[in-house]
Image (cartoon, rainbow, N blue to C red; front, side):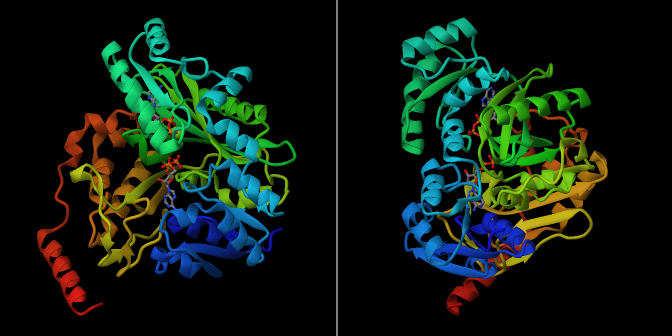
Length: 472
Ligand code: ADP
Ligand code: ADP
Ligand code: MG
């Protein structure tokens, strides 16, 4: 087993990995930018190293991070999610330095990182993929011809895309023509590649993804599914496991396909195979994420498997300690991504000082957070400041627990998505357990809430003003 692991990440994600390290008796080394000197992951790790003045580039500096790992005597590196977690060059450089990358091979990252290449690999493995273009689109003329053949609506997507960006729905020729160059430019700016491809737009789909674990000895299992259909602008906000939409038969079938997909590309470590499922329960492969995922906590809740510990064990060459038939679904779980954003103001990020922080607790409640009272959320990073995961015996119990835990959660000083989630957890569609990706768009009334009690708002503002005046 490893002696010391460098965590090439920050915030809640880094803390999650530090926790598994500690339980495995492995030392953790955190890295931080100057802006993160007061961040919680710096306090929680066994050792922390300042890696540079630039808030964002520091966490992307491959050369520096590999050197810090070597200098601090680490034998492995965990990339977390975001940042360098899907960067094949990073994985490669870690290997070249004689360290172990806790994740899949550089080839797997590269091949699955391109959605067009991934589609080709899946077609070869007899996995159903969303109908669409064969490889990249060469021109707008080709795109128009393909759209006429498939019929509108279609989705124009960036081959290198991620995080919900570089995806545009087109309902007719005019929209396709307009979106083609816009999406190209957007993709180039965000991902450094303007390669586009096209998919049939699936109407009111469910986003259902399967968690995979594959060891270096050829064993591959799935840890069942997560339903991530509650999205805003193609980005997940609330995820549940298992999905209320799948039948036992479909679950088994999709799980088998997900395992086949991973095997087809010789995948090792944790990964996620994402599918879209239409209202008639047809399913198609959408993409594979070659890393730990934000919403892995709900899978941990329903299976009892610590996914990060398994990632570490797999990277250390250990065989999986269970077979597919040993795995069971126990109850339900829901994850809420508590973001420092104002849903009423188009989800604008709200960095600033946290004046009060009370997290919920009790049976079936897990909080993965990285903020504390007095902490100033920097404006440079992802706005997620905590994840609330609740679990319960059945769906209704789990929803009631979610309402209870969201009610206990008290964050002041900055606006968060919590009051919006209280609305979601109390709405009938959520209670019914079945929703597609259009759910939030179809329920704008969920944004009708009072942010916090007006008097408390003023009290918090006064406290901040006094603290600023006193130079605190
Ligand atoms: P999923 O993991 O479900 O695919 P995302 O696409 O949102 O969900 O996951 C990757 C995202 O995680 C990145 O795009 C980034 O916004 C976010 N992220 C990156 N680093 C961190 C971090 N340290 N803490 C929280 N979120 C992060
Ligand atoms: P990312 O890499 O940003 O996660 P994905 O390809 O996984 O991009 O798609 C993200 C989301 O966009 C999906 O969960 C779904 O809501 C929507 N989406 C993507 N492709 C389609 C499609 N062909 N039809 C309908 N919705 C789609
Ligand atoms: Mg995706």
